[in-house]
Amino acid sequence: MKQTEKTILAINGGSSSIKFVLFAGSDPLRRILEGGINRIGHPEATFQVKGSETGDNFSKVVAALDHKAAVEVLLNWLEKRFGPSGLAVVGHRVVHGGPNYSEPQRITAEMIEELRRLSPFDPEHLPEEIELITAFHRKFPEIPQVACFDTAFHHDLPHVARLLPIPRRYEAQGVRRYGFHGLSYAFLLQELACQAGAEAA
Image 1: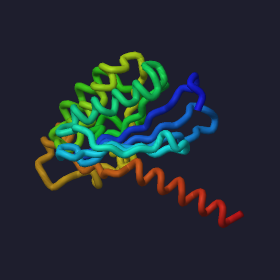
Image 2: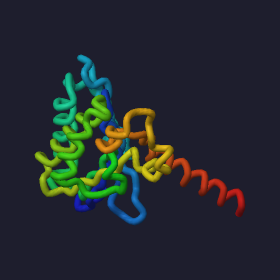
Image 3: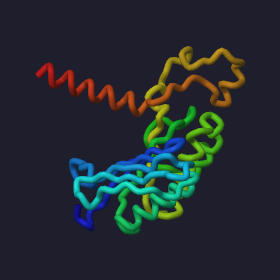
């Protein structure tokens, strides 16, 4: 990859891991690196990276007793590997968009506040994703960040399908059936459509 070529980072912050893929910002996009930090919270967390060039491949034990430490490890590596201005944009997989967020969109301070309010809906994942987003903003404040919501695919469920057997007053607070893994559903449908098209041809 050329040093002047900007890269796009897609990242998924989980409850015990952070996984990512880096693409060269060309047309079409080209995957150049993938990796992650696994076993966050354990004494022997591992940081692994795989790439097309031999020099990019490594696996090492890192100090990541919590998500804050793991994010710091990742940010320091990204800065060293790509420089302070080597990333063009960061795309985050966000587990929950609540009733208000479904379309991929640029992350704002207002969105972060709403995600904090939604944190009780998924206390295992959402706080860690918020920490990841805010840490990136502190380290690389000029880089735009985009959220893609895992609840998006099911966002337009019929009203009756969204209802839970609880008092209606909770629905006004956003408590409803959402459906998850929406980004996976969207990807699988696209792949099935491609396969169907290939077979039809």
